[in-house]
Length: 354
Ligand SMILES: Nc1nc2c(ncn2[C@@H]2O[C@H](COP(=O)(O)OP(=O)(O)OP(=O)(O)O)[C@@H](O)[C@H]2O)c(=O)[nH]1
Ligand SMILES: [Mg+2]
Image (cartoon, rainbow, N blue to C red; front, side, top):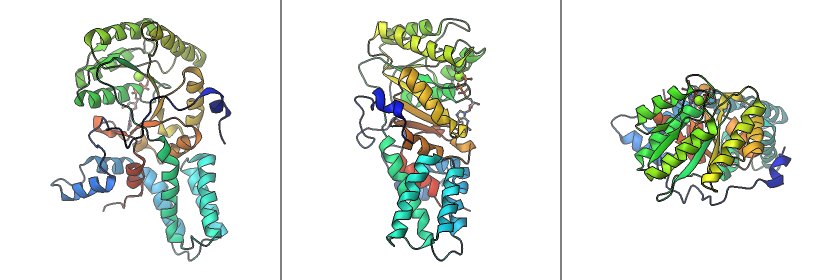
């Protein structure tokens, strides 16, 4: 199902480059997953590298999806209608959603009909290829630029992982040599300001805050003034996940945009939605709501380590043309990974190690 609201006025954010042209802001760099895996195999501490962490984080989804297909085809000699039906049910259970599932099933069925795909054991490879086709167009990385101050506004419902993701991003980009400032724009939830200040201390970046109950838009406006005065490249602004009503939340986010625009007509340059992968298909509703309210330029999907429903990444990729910037596969700073379809799929399909 294509979202009509997308066709109205939302196109891909301007100035995007493909992941192939952009240097990743995180240590994994442009190396392919295979290269990383090879390097790990040669290292003194195999299993401790970034690719291993990704593979480890995706364990539950791999068991559900990839090993699930393995169980389906076990002992099967031909790909028949029953096997295809079981495959479809499995994809839906892994939260790929109706559109991505239909696309994959159409391709598989067509290849079976043309007798290009006959061996049940080749189904996993066919699934892998289809997933890559769905995910590849959403891989567009973004990183701060030298010589200017920009704003990244992080939005999302409560508990999605906004504050944690902000802390991890600040650490990554600081390590890349960028000047980062954080704004404690969640002035609604008690302890939200302290949580962000905790991250500021941990990763050693300044946090602009006024305290619970302050006006979120003015906190973030002041933080932009500070960011520019310091000559820092990026202000990352935290926002509330919950106000008295959902309507209030959307109005507050619109106000933040308006107020920032008075200081810099281009700010906020980026607005990223943080989604909890465990939310399932409701994630698509969240994307639509936030995109309608403020216009998203990126999505971060967190907590992929805590769910067997990693297929939701494909559901989102298939449903909306918004870049998937980062994925979270754990609580450590290095568990936030730039979204790279090849390593994601490699990790998902990686052989489980004994
Ligand atoms: N396992 C795991 N936990 C995560 C990940 N990302 C965030 N979390 C945890 O999710 C919980 C909620 O994260 P927060 O960053 O506080 O979420 P938030 O969106 O800021 O929530 P509010 O401030 O209530 O709106 C925390 O306990 C995080 O440690 C992830 O990728 N994996
Ligand atoms: Mg928070």
